[in-house]
Image (cartoon, one colour):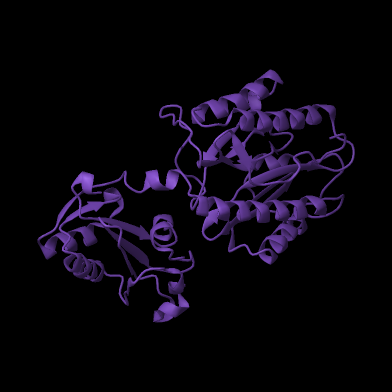
Length: 363
């Protein structure tokens, strides 16, 4: 920050879209709460939180205990003038005048105008200060992610075990929810998607109580939950009864592609090369036309940097985390998808969702 000539950094986030707020302050702003949060970071590392995300007008009803800061200002009003006046007080106490704006394109114009009206403050864009910190996870974060992965894998195991002929999609999803919450999940994030047969080609589709598992039909289970704000995502396929040889080949290809993606992961490799390794296996097996495979990084958000963008490749380093998600999705079959959470290590990668990948006859 000092190298950029800044005394402080300002981060404003709305509603439940507040991962930077949680990263910098610990404040678990639940998505059910109305209100916004403004975080100030001084150049020596001191942090202040200003928030209107207060339920019932009472901070103690609003997870305020999760903020680990000495300076927390709770606002009864979400008006731009209230945010600006309080931020001005904190900045004046810090004698901070040169303020970087984390995301100036999304700072409400009313707050910006109210801040500039205070006088004595100079603002400049500073979009690139927080993202590099979040891109590589700390040992403490990785410890949380290991626990998150274990809970997710356990919940997925419960869902897989519930799959049998005649059971509904909703009953399968319920087992995942029960297991995850019982094991300490903070919340279910996007929850548990379960789809049987061709309906699974919709991929991210809510389970239905009137859709039942049929023999030989592909079942896709996609599960995401949160622990300490961190997000998981994991997928498995199940087939009950006889599996069609062509479907078995797709499942084998998907499993092999997942293994190839993990094998390609190590420090010094470009992120896009991991995706290429996944897709190469699927193409070799003859399923390139229905290949929708991706990788995406995760943390406090479901999708973070690096973005696995071919136009902006990123070199992997130890501590980066992402999902390897090979997908073969023929519309007449459903979603063949086997997905794991991984973290890049000094020598390769560690799988954080320890559950077998093969759950079909002959596997």
